Image 1 (cartoon, rainbow, N blue to C red):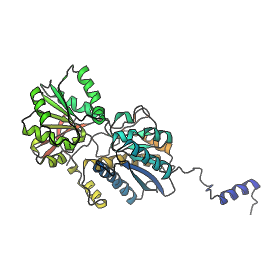
Image 2: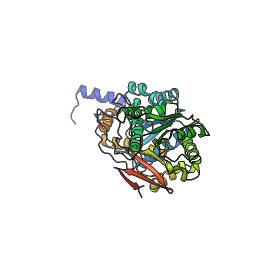
Image 3: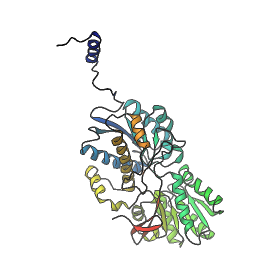
Image 4: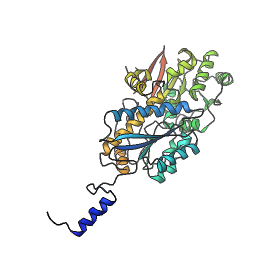
Length: 397
């Protein structure tokens, strides 16, 4: 047996005392072990909008469960830590702090309410932790570009511009009316679109109405809009109020096209709220999904195996798509996983197809808003139709 030098013996002794695996040149990151990767999620899980949070989080959880079922990523299983943000900036900031400093997660994949997510921006940046958005859309969350913040969802401004330009592409459309919630969510979607309306098309709104959250009647807004004789109406409101607006528009004979944001894109859900597809026959909405939720039966079946009581909705699919982008980055980052390597893998992601989203996902070092395309969806005789590249197609079968 050869005699070991004193220096070598000392290194081995220290390694033994402190259980340091000297055979590896890689020091594991926070939230990563030889067998696991810890991912943090946050969303509104209590309160009046928990019906947004649970479907989104559960959709992502289904994808992570399936990854674990298949053996994990490079031999590591996903461990999830999920926090309630109550859809408030204070709640979200508290949730993120706990995920980072107490639960010690490797990355965060979460966020549904835009204002809440915006409240976490500085905390995430200061902690230098990779963050992949789930469903928040406000542009300013991701502007200016920061190395640690990514989003695979269509930004609010694209949502507004998409539906505005679609309506104005229809022959004879010159007079536009607007009904919107008087909040930051609607303003974030409308700001660039209204600027485009004035500067590019040289048009002004013929009516500008507001509709409060929780409103149960849209009669006053409908009658004033009808009196203004618009060619089309922009409706930047949430599903509950959108259903009421469509119902009352049908009741009072407002028969012009309506354009809506992707908040209204689940037309099957909207139909169920209204009670019939007929009041929706003039509605066209922006969508970041490539097909109706009814066109993903295998995903629905898989999700049901984990969450049998869940209704499979567009938010479920949104959570799934976000988790798929996270997983793709982790795969590309390799076994020698660090936060910086993960970010590098996301920043070189190009034309990644989730098979769910209307847009393929592309990130670059200078652009962390991955969705570059939004489609239009409408309902004809209880069937959804999607416009892709200027052509109407039935939802994918």
